[in-house]
Length: 145
Image 1 (spheres, rainbow, N blue to C red):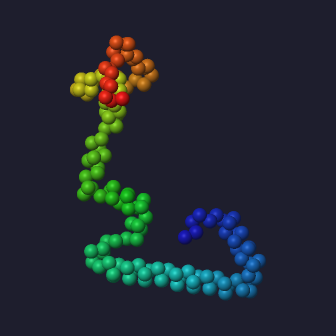
Image 2: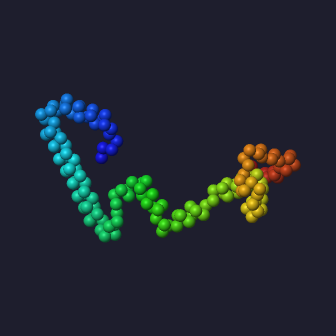
Image 3: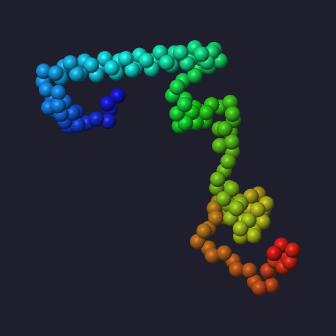
């Protein structure tokens, strides 16, 4: 519960508590605080049990930690029923980027994907794109403008 409190902070809290409540009242205050924390935990557990009973047997595997979006998504991604692992493994980002670069540069994507290039499927981003000649412009379409 208090994993993020360091030893210096703990000593500071103890000294502050002794100064505020006094050494004679401090044990009573500590008992009251621990009793209150215990009651809150018991109330929380009983509320969880009531919710589980009201949801019925369909939700017997329901965990309240699943309401945290990060935990829910992590649990769903680990679930192989959806086939997400096959989709994730079947997606080759390098190949997709090479196809996009080929399309931008106007190269034929069928020939580049069937025959491996000398650069191992990599796109040289240091090369400047070829500038088309003046007569290579696409035809003017008056209806498109």
